[in-house]
Image (tube, rainbow, N blue to C red; front, top):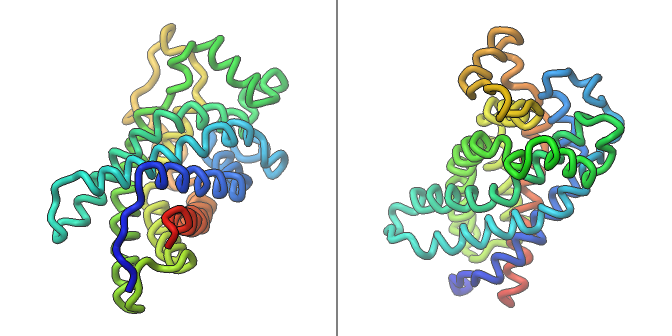
Length: 276
């Protein structure tokens, strides 16, 4: 068996950037369909199946830095937290949660622009990611780029608290079974796919809330916006429980397949950088 080496901060940073960009570009059309299914205006009015790469510009800008921030923080926290091996799942949960907050500082502004582009929120005047960003700045200032930051963190922490302990557990079980460590990239990809799909399905209601908050273009300085609980109740009462799971199939497919590519590419890249 190979030595159990750990990637450095820079290696995690670079590998995470490569992995994040690969996934976001490859699966962007599925994400667009998911976002349109979740929008309050309805799938057809949000754009249907046309223009599925609208908003991809913001992803190109933010994907690599966001993923790099996540993985570099995650690997650093895993090595820093003073937990025994028997408490590895707790370590992975806390590490992933802290990493998600760090990544959200970069990811949320690009998500705001992306979701509004995907659903044609600004119409013809916001026909590019750059013009949409200018409209966000003009209408809501810098804080407009962080609309939905709270619910994004609230979505990501449960998601990663489910996904990453499962991912690490599956990798551990598989490496013991094949008596080899590290696993090959495709083996890690399968572990990531199963863990990601399970976590995605369970956290879909939080994802619906995140989408609705980000698509709300009202000025919070001029009128009081509804709380997350109020939004949740409104969706449940007016649209039914089914609406809270809108887009669950594309979300699960996207994250399951995306998790495989994301974590597989990450393992491949980080092992390449480490010379394993």
